[in-house]
Image: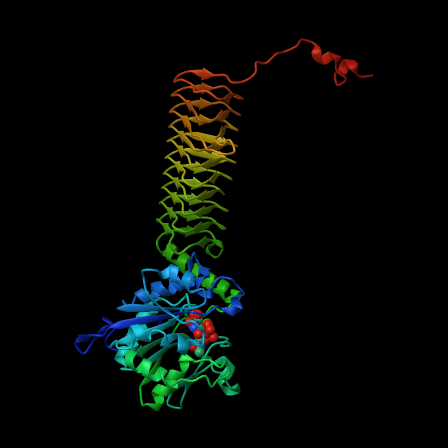
Length: 479
Ligand code: UD1
Ligand code: CA
């Protein structure tokens, strides 16, 4: 992103003493044939949110008075993503990007101001670049300004054709480009700023006389030139921003670039990464300073991680809230909350609607679902706790199982503070284990245990003297 040469960088909307109004059109009607997907292209996700949502967020940076999203292929699905956030115009037949913009006419025809047109498949364009584009457009008093970039490999993009004075004269699409034009490496990002009135006037004059038989939006550029309008280009410094995602290869590239950006920002904010290229963090995840994250950790959705926490290799958290100074070792947390000072794993699985309170210890191969685990409670090994309220300072011995499901209904288990559950206890819900109570190892508990009691829910051991001597395995029986 290079700085603009105009004098308006401080307030892009301010021109000659009056406020210019911004509008935006997001193109999202196409199927995205090259994705080979049932899902409309713009709904494919990058770092946890759809490409369309990324574009919408970038567009916010120019504070448009109105945003019109052009929908078509599976329009209801696309509309859901931005429902209540933008207006929508339907393009029933996808006849090209120029035709798509025409669909916004009912909303914008009489609007005075400047209109940003952006494709829904360019998730890496930043709001900052859009603001720079506006500043450049306004300060150069252009009718149209194209956001361009210099591509290493320009194949597939529209090329920017300049005359010998370096003025932009037209855009030529890949399929229409001659040998000379195909060598041009300055490409059209598919993002533009137009004088709104001039845009809709020019669109009346485009046709389908081209290799794809489509109404190209890009054709308005040569129309402006013929009418004597001033056309310009604002070139991105970073080609990555311009990436148009047409297939799954580009989708993976977008994901990689977005990952670099997200992780770089977290590092700037004070988060340690062992290997940022192998750490997968969705865009809305929040991480406090002094968190350390080892390789191959995935943090998705609305996850939040508190300061001083360590997430080791292979930890996978979706919509989880983790407190401060907690250590999560190679574990999975889904839609659950883990408080400060907890130690967990390896290989714990915390499932939805669970709350692990502070200083608890959840050890290896422990699964918790829909349960609260109290402060300082320990479940060290091979345990399943479901639909349970477990108090503080409880010890859940190895192999403790709550039996919460009879095949039809789920029942609650209540384990009060300071209870001590021996190893391999099976606790059949609904049941309550009282404060300070003991449950003997190997018990099957089907009835409530009063406070301070011990429950022995198992067969009594019987020893038969000398019985083993009658069996073939015994040394006295061997030949
Ligand atoms: C377009 C540009 C090309 C530019 C590239 C940047 C044109 C003619 N070409 O090509 O110069 O380099 O983007 O990525 O504009 N869409 C509709 N309705 C339609 C057709 C497309 O809404 O009838 C939407 C698509 O959903 C997509 C966007 O417009 O979000 C761009 O369409 P796409 O087919 O991907 O255009 P490109 O061939 O990439
Ligand atoms: Ca495209």
